[in-house]
Amino acid sequence: AVAGFGLALATAGITGAALLGYLVLRRLAGDRAVEALASRPRAAAVHRALLRGRGRLLWLVVLVRLSPVVPFAATNLVLAAAGVRTLVFLVGSVTGLLPRIAAVVVAGAGLAELDLSVAADVRLAVAGAIATVLVLVLLGRAARAALREAAVDAPGAG
Image 1: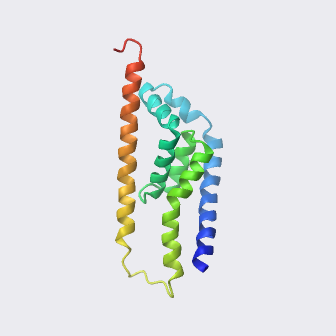
Image 2 (image 1 turned 90 degrees about the vertical axis):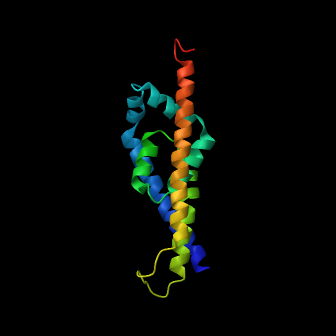
Image 3 (image 1 turned 135 degrees about the vertical axis):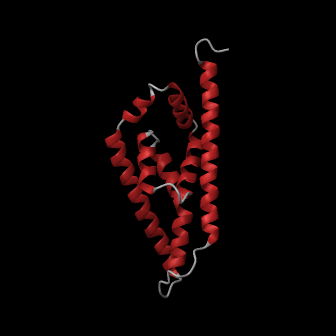
């Protein structure tokens, strides 16, 4: 029961912090990042393709949040500046952060005292590494597909 309450509380707090950061950064960034992409047709094509595929974008957000490598605040900034919709950001963040939050809450609930000399669970590191590789592969595939599509749609293309 304590772990369940802790999980709900931690999830609400971390998700609330992510959402607050996202909303503030979205307000500050406005459309400047998206407008900057307009001068770079290849980057703009990739950006449009990623935002167009909401299901794929949701899974990319989930995988980015699962990755222990990608900084929390930087993810908020990139997703806000890129124009990711708030609902996609929120659902993807909760889904991706929940396993990490649960692992910490369960570990913390079972502690009688904090002992930092005990090695971390290797399974968490492996899962995080897999999520990192998956997000890179999916982003690469999406970028290549968008660039192929942009080349086909370009004036004078084949």
